Image (cartoon, rainbow, N blue to C red; front, top):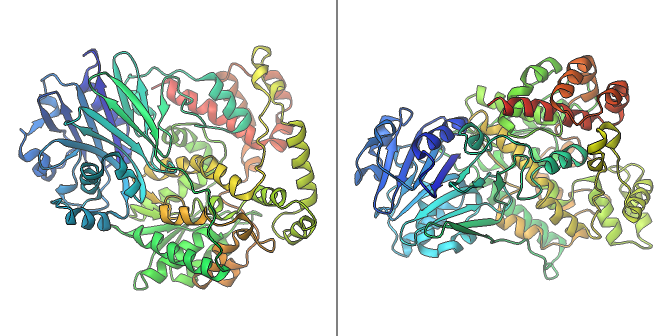
Length: 631
């Protein structure tokens, strides 16, 4: 798990050395254990060290057949530069230093992430004659590309974003994992093509001037959307979407983007429920087991909900002789507090349980820092809870955590998944299904009727009264129609809302130099299997995530197995924001000039009560703009 960056010069008008160093420094929090560079021309490949490259890393393989040059002393002309910030997780030795090359120096890579099945892939590649000199998954990726080309991506199980220079074919191969756990952004101007793990690398290096994409700005404010398209909130910076790879031709300075993965659409041949549950249990155990592979201690986030409890329970089963550190955000005396459930799980697995209780004062103290590390405004204060949990983990010397993101999108865990199921099975049995679901979804009949009306008439929320006259056209939200089948809705969510949650997960953890692993989200064998199961089997007898519960019930307390409510990361927004009303209004008035300030000021209490997340988005956007415009 690391940070990556790179530049391809088109006309020698960009200072590669200064720019790549600035990009690397801007993402140093992603890799506090070391810094490395490599510069390339048609003739030369030159690994370069900086004052943050540990001395022992200068003995790594890529320096053995190349001169040892410091960044300060580099003066030759080059066309391509790679940078890498290292967070040492697997093979902590100097062998893991990046950018890494193969033994001939024909292929170079800067890699971020984990390919969890690297041990199995290494053995397969050894049988084909490949020789390895490190214990890293990075070297496995290099050799896999040499063996299978672009199809190597079909072999990887995990999370990743990387750029690989293929000197033989004079191209750079960039790729991102299937669901988007690891980030990859790029810019393409007349002078250079550049890529990085975070937006701030482009802004702080002056490769791209800070300018807001207006369409994306209002899509965020009224719909809560971020990164829904290749375009971003930063004008001129683009996102390589999950399940895609990019090939840059160094001769023509052109590139092509290809989608390499699609979720299964065919359902399993008839299998008994018991067989399906047994198969899910096996795949869950394997997914978590290979994500426990690490040369440093692994902890876990624990909310007290079903998903994180399953991870804690199975982890204990797989490593019974270890006491895992567990981290929870608690909110005593709040209705959504899950302290009691989290404690039950911790006691059940014998965990070393740590808690943090974020406060309003801390939130307003840390909001600029939160937005800086998030790279984008946040749509909910729940991101702050996650931020504090990761800080707690770092304070307890943890560099790897497991987290439960993705289970809802696979197994059917949100209220709108019930609506998709009811729409799919509309008929005489719908009344029974809705009635069975009342423990989880209150007022199910009303909710379904409201949804049908919204879908039929395109009803939406109108925020235009809060905007000046010339921006009112952006004020009407989009009505996202719920799919007519559960599996289709799950697919939409897996390639939609889940990526937004994973983006927050990545930034919250990497802000503190922590690798966050998500066994439900990116295990290709588990994901493919679950999406080949009929939707009606995933929510059964009104019980959400029915198959997941049954497959894991032996690893968790019965109180968790039986939980029907869903909370997630929450914070008391109204209680936090009302005392800071004037501070919030002053900031958004000074930064967001498109607002109808008088109307918002006069109606602030009402807006905060009925549209609290809209106020959060306004405030966070203003903070984000202030932070990034001053870089």
